[in-house]
Image (cartoon, rainbow, N blue to C red; front, side):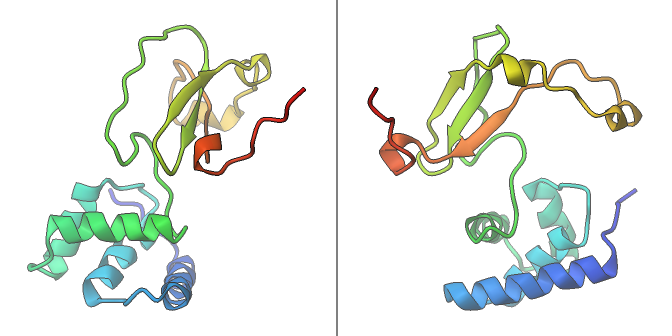
Length: 155
């Protein structure tokens, strides 16, 4: 069953889209509006193909490429975030020791880091209602030093 977002929240998200698009000079085509309306109207965190199928029911001529490009444009405007694999696809990690990741949102660089504080981060009790947690790690997203993030201070 598809979990719908409250109508007021969907309208707030649509207004935020209109404002951000206007400020960025992005034309709000009917296709872009329908893609955003679909993702703003659910709490399900859909993947691209799910959004495509739902929008295609209302707009049979919409292409999968248009949905991909629209979702990434929305991401670049800060109107949606991503979960799981990034733009460049699934990443593989042979390091099975406990660790976390830093991911550069511009160039895609991914580096491991260790943090005992994050290892011991207590998980909320609410998770029990969602299922059994097998493991957890933190992914920190930002800009690497090469892409303009904070430079390392010399000691």
